[in-house]
Length: 200
Image (cartoon, rainbow, N blue to C red; front, side, top):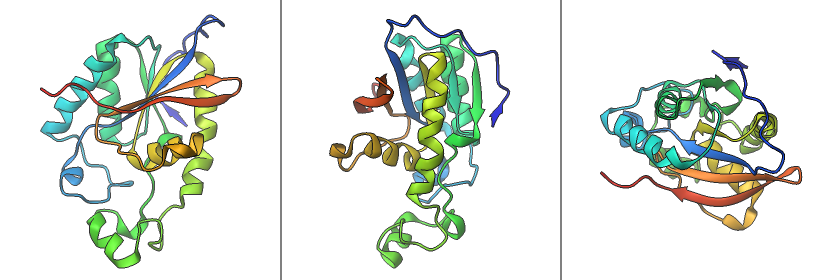
């Protein structure tokens, strides 16, 4: 479901590449403390807001017509900063929401891993397959109107990129980093991963 959905831009020229920037939101206090965020809704902290500003500047060279995000505040705020800098509309889409960590939301990630061996094995955590089942079709849908930025979460970005290109292996998905995808012949190609804005 889209929120505050502005008019969608006209499709781009058929010869133009359909590029999608898949970005992670800026830092929050829970990120800084190493806690699982999931559907918790902390705002960007001071560092995260500055990260989002640098991310917006780093994406200034891309041509995109809108910015979509997870409905959580940290993603919405990051998307608003990117969209504002580019002069394009922003909206949220529930399909790009973070992974639901259930009862482990807010717990230190290291404690959960120590107890269960991995976050995936902790009871009550949304399966990776369920995350992919909502996100992959969403990407196919939103790219139809042309190049855009999607601001979401590491627990969405990592499995998504690995599903598109299994040879990527383990990925680092830092706050305010971005990845570049292209739509080719009805599928997705990962052009680059873990791009980071210049340090202040």
